[in-house]
Length: 109
Image (cartoon, rainbow, N blue to C red):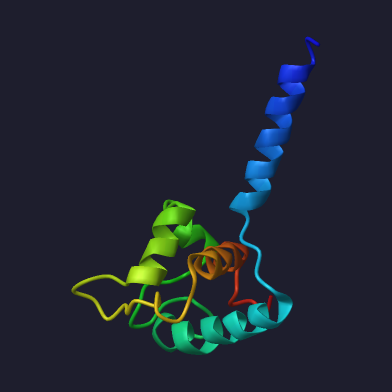
């Protein structure tokens, strides 16, 4: 009985961690990678090293939370050329794109 609460807490924590990772179907992942390389790459550079927009490299994103980055993707940035993609993407897809950017999209991954 004394192990019931810790096991339940661990189970809940693992379920929440799994839910936090964005799950996107494989076909849609390919479409989103294309969007990253071509649409995002048109401003941020095809290798994500910057251009009109700031670099989107793992090290340049390290100081921003996943939630903040997903919000920028979905809502854009006022006063900048960064458009909102919320009409094209779901919140889950935006979180998935953040995960890909954190891994490094400009190096062929």
